[in-house]
Image (cartoon, helix red, strand yellow):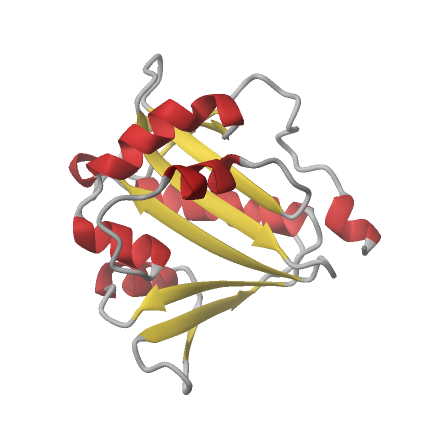
Length: 184
């Protein structure tokens, strides 16, 4: 494995704390790494998503997210980080974000989902900025997201953040959006 792929993230896995973030709209939330202890709350969160949101997140028309998938999302490994967002002082998850880095440490994939009643607060923008910073800190050069072709809000947000569209020629139902990261 590439040495860069094993660099610690700015928020360490053993750090019990969280990072407090504020969106451009002034909404405040706390963000921290998910752990296996978050299984019940993550299961509830995923159950609160609309069917289209579940389809957009997992690119599959599942009605109920399985326990195995929830456990998979929370497993600890060096290449995938799952971050959970909470209102300050609350235990209910309002959003989740995933950053998966390839073994070479140069390319990563991101995915987000937000509870319906918290959409349009700027959480997606702020979490995506956070995930891009996490990727940059680990030496990742390119970040991409695979979106359902009809997930117009996500595609528009990503384009606004500098992602470029690469239409998937093998599957017309999805779009790959890609951003090249620069050093800061």
